[in-house]
Amino acid sequence: MNARPSMELVCQTGRFLLLVVVLGLLAWAGVGCQRPAGPAGQKYHCPMHPTYITDRPGDCPICGMRLVPIKDVATAGPAGGDSSGHEPSAALAHIQPGQFYCPMHPEVVQDGPGRCPKCDMHLVEKKADEGRPDQPPAPPAWAKTVPGRTMIHLSPEKRQLIGLTLAPVERRRLVRTLRTAAVVEHDETRFYRVAPRFAGWVRKLYVNFTGAPVERGQPMLRVYSPELYAAQNDYLVAWRAWQQLPPDAHAETRAAARALWEAARLRLELLEMEETEIRALEERGQAAAEIEFRAPVSGHVVQKRVVEGQAFQGGETLLEVADLSRLWLRAFVFEMDLPRIAVGQPALVRFPQWPDRTYPARVSFVYPHIEPRTRRAELRLELDNPRHEIRPDMWADVELVLDAGERLAVPASALIDTGLRMVAFVDRGDGHLEPREVQVGWRTEDFYEVRSGLAEGERVVTRALFLVDAESQLKAAMAAMGAHAH
Image 1 (cartoon, one colour):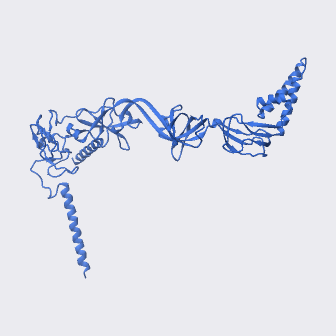
Image 2 (cartoon, helix red, strand yellow; image 1 turned 180 degrees about the vertical axis):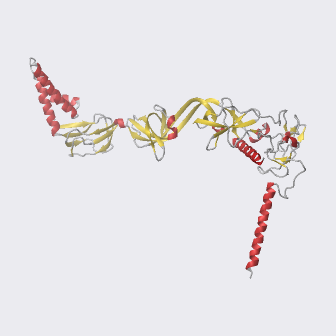
């Protein structure tokens, strides 16, 4: 029995709330009873957004500022400006040149300087050419218009109010410091393996642990090989036959003996006997049962795969030795920076454990591949390490100085990146600011290279740029709405 009256009460309350919302929207739009029309023919506008003009008093829907009446309606167009979309002059038409007025309240006018009684702002003097609806100059033929934006006009007072600053488009040297990370690696050209070309046994191991330092020429291991022993005996036989050949021997005999000797010598060389060891064999006149392998470079043992008494086959790797006097650094850069890096480019290397030291290096190679997951390219730098204090697999910080030379440039603060294009606002010299689409190239921390869209000597907005851009988009949108309305 009580459910029906409750439902009716809820419906009545809902209708009442809906009526309140509708009336509020109508009042905000300027068509409700809360906002009566002004005197017949009277127009109102916002001092900060003069393009907003209405025939009813109230507040600006953009900034909330109180609308002020326009004294001279005849100078205002139907959309609050001229057909070109520029700022109207009606707000200042009633002020004579030389008089002082308040930029926030143009109805406050007096013959001398002072302060506005409404906002306490300093009054400004109206110039002789201020407020004239002059047509702005046409943009250059090569300038690209920007969709959704239009040229605007800002008076000197408004520019000072928003803190607008300009900077010239000029040629300057563009230098950028690219910072990246790198990992230390062995120099692959200074990496050696001890792999005998004959089979045998390890009789003595002088370097018996991984990481052991070695000096060039230092004995590392002594081996015995029946194959090498037989080759030494064959060489001694051939060498003695050549040495004992009589001087009056036949030419063919001498040639055969020399060929036999050279073949035996070549066999020893192919088995990796050095010249000094062959001469020692000739002086000794007796084959050595064992032979020593010496360190080819100064460095350290990277891998040890043998122990004393172990048998090995020909070609088997017993030890690996790396030279640490020169190392490689594998650095990583994004693929977008790759075209700006060249072989031979100098770099500075720092290590976290020695923050006060810098090591000079150079780019020696650019790897011809891109890492697919991280989209990074890889560089190789060469670094001298005479004291062997830098070790493989260390992390390093690398600084590459990228010098593009002298190019036409604009400050980075003068461009707005919309995602589709770069936009700048150019000062035309008569108070008008023109939006331009700019094609950019090199980028440093503070400047962009200009490839098209701006000319040398033009001045662009660098501060209050987003306020200027918002005003330009607002005027373009309002002009489009006016065009659709008509």
